[in-house]
Amino acid sequence: MIKSYGQAIDKSWFSSLKVVNEDSVNKKIFIKAKTEFEDSYIRENYLKDLESAFKAQGFSFELVKFSNFNKI
Image (cartoon, rainbow, N blue to C red; front, side, top):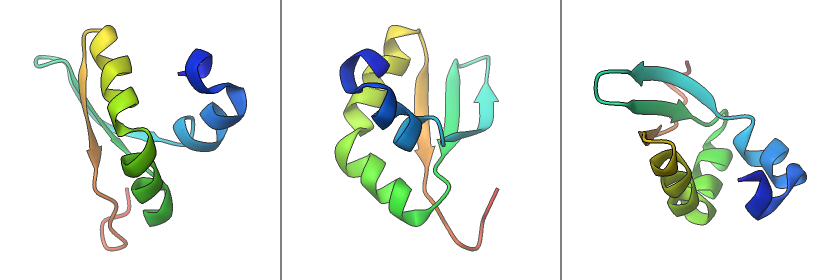
């Protein structure tokens, strides 16, 4: 992702994502954004690229929907 978007974008959008669960059996990572805005922006602009990056490493992922009631 750094090669595609550069360090500034990586630091602003991807480095702030938090791993909330890891299913090692099914090789699936669950990640979550810190804010509703970040969640929405990542879904609209980077979701497909994140899918490709995880797939290239042999994993799938789910961006857990942000909720003010469910902060992790």
